[in-house]
Image (cartoon, rainbow, N blue to C red; front, side, top):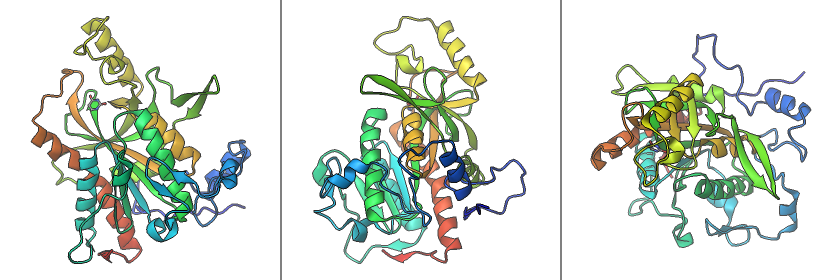
Length: 350
Ligand code: URA
């Protein structure tokens, strides 16, 4: 008999539609193992630490995480990152700095007097990373190619640091389909541009399809944290991942366009029929890699426009910045709830 080991963060639920387990629960991992999903063994141990399932890494002495400029033999990764419980990833360096500041304030995490947040990976000249108490924030650029590089190094970092049961959030912007601009969408599933629920990667000359699965229970818990006082709506929906901002998202305002407005609307309506509420550029890869790694993950995006009404993102930058905080607000409530349950709110010195 396998026992459920979900420690729900939001458990005051009376809806019957809630998913019974997190993806990382023993019950689910055992099922996945039986389905043959882990040819190299389970990706996490019973205590929630992540396991090295690529045996080649055991042959490397002092793995170097090139794009983070952090290494096993050059840094004490356990001391630096062993207490990380939450990772918040977002496109721009500014968003992840704002995110670290906002979360730090909301969880009452004080840096020593006279010190400030520092960009831990500044020397990489690629990505920016900040740590505030149990929260790491990292930027990933635009699209799958830049996101997958940093996400894979973050996964290795979480393994080497011994972080327990980490939760990774992607906090992004997106184009909504038929929903009010400024709404927050918590993704249930990620779909590619062919409406397939997979992340497809060409490996050694063959296309490998990986299931793009997010943690449904986590998504439900996050969405439940919206309140009647919020001046925005938060909803659960499917999300399409495009490999391009213009033609890949059916826009007609790029430098090239070989289809009509009618073709575009037909496509957007087709997406709606799959329950797709928004379009961004990372969710399939983000969900597939975190799922493979045995990490609970959620993709939480604000919509900047309604694609049924136009293609251009014309809002002033200051309004855009004020919208970008919305997914961070929802994720912060989740982190606060977790810390409160564990008697760590306010967090205090970090
Ligand atoms: N990001 C996207 O990928 N698409 C949009 O329409 C807006 C933000």
